[in-house]
Length: 103
Image (cartoon, rainbow, N blue to C red; front, side, top):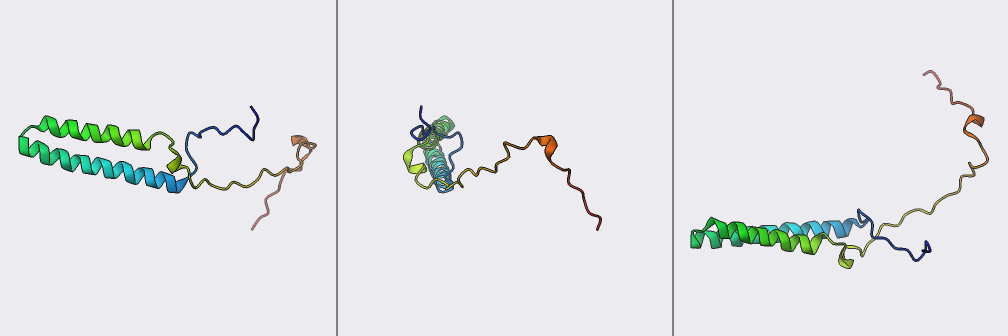
């Protein structure tokens, strides 16, 4: 694969706005499902329904926020280009050790 065309999905996407959006969506879905689950469980007097609704909200939020959807990758970070320092010619032993000055 050519380096220019190869666009792997990074393990940790470098888009902080997208990460913030995913976190807000995740927390919002969890909160809404918890409130709905609590109210429905209270009305029916079945705690199991509360748990099921919260688990469904958790599954939905995972489905919407864990995959790297394009909406979370709209603002990638701009990285500096790689700089060639020309250190290939020098060997590690050729350098002089740095001396610390007394203050």
